[in-house]
Structure formats: structure tokens, C-alpha cells
Image (cartoon, rainbow, N blue to C red; front, side, top):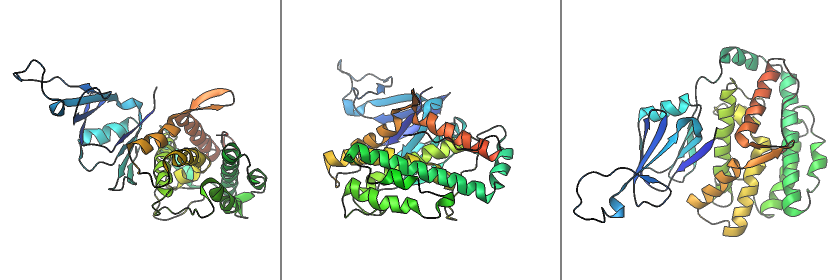
Length: 321
């Protein structure tokens, strides 16, 4: 089965459901990878209607959609679209006028023993939470180290730092690593600021889509996205997704660095830049001699976490990315 990420940001469209298909209709010229719908009426010309008057229709199986991102203000959709996406296990992400995600819709039912898993998740012990967070931070810092080694030829000691992470990251090694990591990627004056109008725009967008992927996997594993291991902002409804996405952030970081080196930090967050970021998340990863999609990888991670909560295993499955 194909897992697809779809971004609708460039032009108006109407979304509906036909059977098990998502139908995307828009006006425009043919020849853009879309399939024109049947046209009715006599145009009085053997050449047919002008391209601007053609109705373009694209259909995509709902079961193939992982994330649908909508940011154009003139997207119209039926209720069946939202319920169909939820039933298929897909995430729907709504964006504001700056194309930044502001809301997310996820399925309410993701697993046949979901209630039991909620109970196990809510009652897991403090020491177990701290141990799991230690493993997540270690995996994140190792991922950052590997990225620096690939892009800059030196991991700046991050691999050694990862070995110093203790239960609950009491020594705040995550922050120590960040102080070396970000200047090495974007320059000494760079600061990670989600409101800054620079490289942060690309990171924000990529992280938001990555967050949706993790939230989808969490729900599919029968876990509650609001019951986190470490993140505890009372206004954050996706704390567990935010926890689990940490080791996967360098996927977005690498795509952002490579795009910015080509286009510059002031390049627009447009269809092209979004395609680069989404492309990084839809590539295949070689893990333990096997080629896997990110969707498969995070699904295994979420399932392993559910097994830890159930007492069926001790360690979280965190592949090297």
C-alpha cells in the first residue's frame, strides 16, 4: 500500500468523496499530470473549450493517503472528506494564510483494544517514562551527529554527548547538543525561533508534517497523542507525537539545509520548497538491510511503545535514520 502526502496550497479546489476515492476538482489547463473530467455541451469549435475553462479531476484512493495538508483559502470540501480521511486512518492538517499548520484532525479509533492501551499508557510508572525519554534523546543526538558528519564532515562531539544522556536527561544533554548543532547547520547567528522569518519557516513546515505522521502512527497503535512521556505543555494536544518525533527531526533538517544552500534562506515557502520538504519524508530509508518508508518506521516505533506500556518489551524501537 502507498502512503502519500498531499499539499493543496497553490490554487482553489473542491474536495469530495466518491466511494473509496478522494476526488479533487479544479479549473485549469490539462497536461499537468491531472485527468480532465468529461466536458458536456457543444462548444461550436472542433478544438474544444479554452484550457482555462476545463474542469480537472483527480482521484486518489483514501486508503493511500497518509497526510492531507490544506492551506489555500479557497479549498471547499464536504463532510464526507473529513470522515473518509479519519476512517482511512489519515491525518488532515489545516494551515493559515502563511501556509503554517494550525490544526490537525486524527481518527478517534485506531486500535481494537484502544481503551486498554489508554489505561496502560496513563498508568505507566515515572521511572519507565524517564528511561524511555533517555532513549529518545540519545537517538535524537545520535541522529544529529550522523547528519553533521554527512554534511560538515565532523559531528562536533555529539556522538560522545549522546553517551552521557541519563534517565530523564537530567543533565539536559539535548540542549547542550543543540548549541553545537544549529550553528553548524545554519551559521553562528542562527537561533531556533518558530516565529522568525528565515530558515525557521522551512523547519516549521517540515516539522508540522512530520508531527502529523507521528500522531497518525500513535493513534494507529491505540495510544493517546495527548499523554506524553516528557512534553507537558497543557495546551499541547499531541505531546506523545512531539516526544516520538525527536529522533526523526534531522530528516527535515537535512532537507532544509540542502534547499537553503541552493535557494537561499529568504526563498519563499511555496509549492517547490514544500515539495522538497515533503519529498524528504516520503523517501525510503535503508534500515538493518531493508528498505522502508518513514510511515513503516514510525508505525513500528509507536507499536513498540505500546508494547512497553503493556509490559511486553523493555526497549523502544528507534531505528538509525
